[in-house]
Length: 260
Ligand code: COA
Image (cartoon, rainbow, N blue to C red; front, side, top):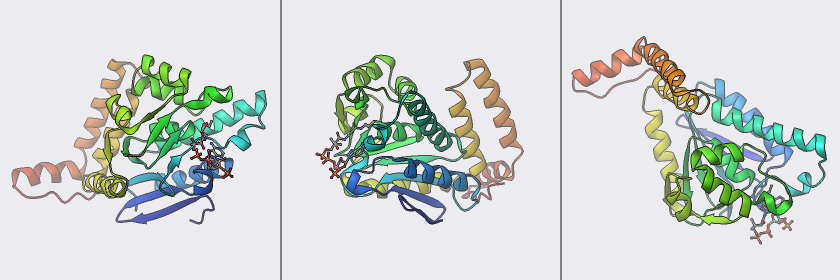
């Protein structure tokens, strides 16, 4: 696939998607969102990809938010569409069915923080900075941030970040649970790839069913979520990977999963 504003590479069943507008600190314009949508539509059905890593080009920024020069032109109707399109793309990233790791290598502001939150695992570099500074522009987060931040940290911390527009550093993001781990900038991608390789080494049916069950916990009641869990558990029990995983354990050998 050829893109102008993102880079897409697949190696050893791991896709790396790099937002590639370093001169604009990787701000998300419409073309970036269009390309992310196309890219994840392909990843969804590409049997050669198990896990995706999203990062930003350069050493300064993951994504510094929605592109403010485009944003400044919207009105009531196009503003709503602007928000809905970003939500749609981020929902696709979150729900296309396979794990996504955010390797946050600098500023993750506004839409950048929202993009990281749409990923399933968040690793950050020591120089990363997070925030939802939209209030400084007279708007609110529009790509799912009010919802995901409240669930990921808690509504009090989400309110503080969104209402003040304050930025926090990687240590604070780790403390409040916004990121899973922090690494030096030069180690960040290696660690993200290491985690992706570990996930890729498992049976992918189980990985994808687990992800589906985890995501459902945001949307349904606990009892409905447990129904989903047991239904997906049952489906896993019908796979060859289940037979292989349990046999390998009992035979004291490494499993050889075929993702079937
Ligand atoms: N949209 C469009 N362009 C952006 C941008 C954004 N969200 N964030 C940064 N840029 C551009 C700048 O306009 C500048 O472009 P220029 O060189 O053509 O003037 C370039 O990226 C570098 O940014 P600059 O502000 O010079 O870097 P800095 O190190 O001084 O500051 C930030 C970095 C992230 C603190 C600052 O760029 C910023 O506050 N960005 C906006 C963050 C934001 O409000 N995001 C939410 C949007 S909804």
